Image 1 (cartoon, rainbow, N blue to C red):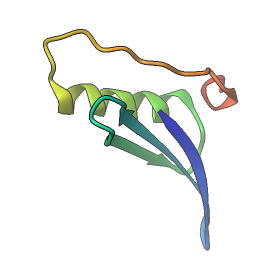
Image 2: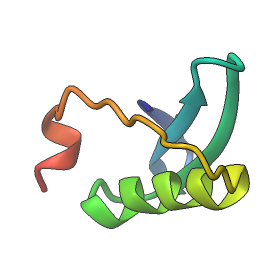
Image 3: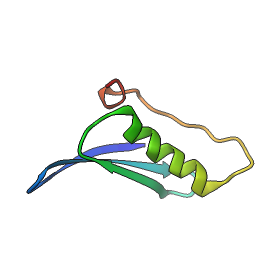
Image 4: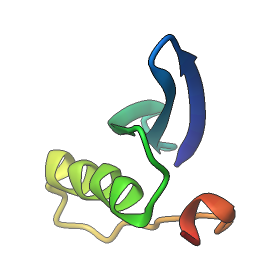
Length: 69
């Protein structure tokens, strides 16, 4: 999961991208004008829905400050 912010003329846009490290592809993304848990969880849920894998998956996060609000 990659978290970044982008400055726009309307303010900051926060972006989370979920990466599939095996396929080396971005498999989902979520954008918001505020940093909160729902924003990150939406990106993760989209990745799970898009993959629809029957096998187990591993999620890793360093639990940075982005996820503590």
